[in-house]
Length: 440
Image (cartoon, rainbow, N blue to C red; front, top):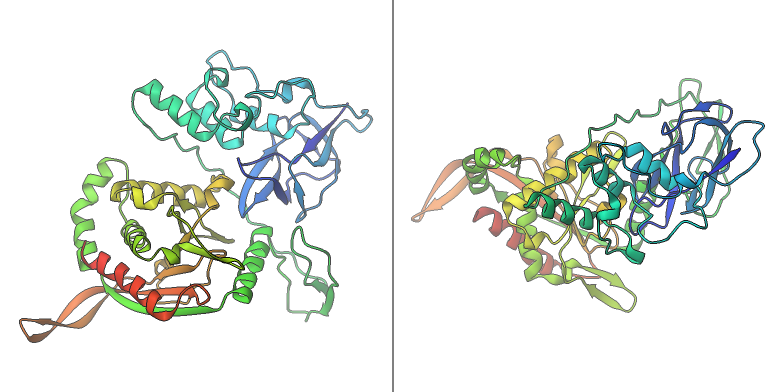
């Protein structure tokens, strides 16, 4: 018997995915629930386990290709098996174990198998993040009211259910990270191909170049290729302008030192980034045009403030989004930023958590960079770069007398879309951020 493996839906709003890497090749045996491939959706990688044990018979979608959810991407079974639909038990929610705990691999694997036509539509689909939360809390999905489309259980449904059960709102515990091995660059042949088409795009002519004997070609990962495409498109369509100011972070550093122990008692590590997010959210409230997007019909002003915070990885960059940042206090922002950054580095973000941002902050100073000219994260209006915090001698004036003082200083660089705003508007916005940080 042969089982067809389909592209799973890895997020509430995700309609397609890119094959990042096949972890098995045709002819190789695979155990049930063993990771079979990596799927990339909007730069987030997710492992898809095998729904059944057997042999990987055929790969139908190669690495780097983007297909819609539900597309058959591979076939598993025995070499002599006949093609048949996936077992019905893989198409619906697996039954709880004796302890009431649903194994994470089982519920995620169920998403990858071909659905059984007779399976009921109500509450049978679980996204990977929802399945993980249910498994970690030992819940029975049949008892969780679903508010999603068609009665689907959403992440918020699970969190509300857990909060009601425990009598207080709690966060789902993080799953231990699974290390992701970076692909080892292979030595390129004497004649190599360059310029392959981006995932999901139309094929174009491929230029062939001769490499020197002492050179090698490092193949672009799907993440790196998508970043390249996104950055190229941003520079091409938006006229970028960058304005720079320096900020005195004495108040921020003093407040952080005074509150650090209190935050740690609540399981939160306090860094400079939440202060910046809070200052940006305040400034966006005063200059809403920079919380907008340019269209041919006009500028779309977003009423809700969703701030993306760039997180550097070894192979690229992710931008998880802090939603409704203006509605959170410093503790809430610190908790959200820390959680998103941690899960981004351990590849445990869900695709929806990198979408819908209205403004982006990139803290390039963590690597020692003083200031930069970041590229706008389309379709947003602007991006803020935060440089390294460095103690420098500056001149201060007190009671009409100039004096030299040592202060923790940093450069703030705002890159904005000149179609949306002019220099005066951008400078006023950056000045609001500076004043908010210096008034902590």
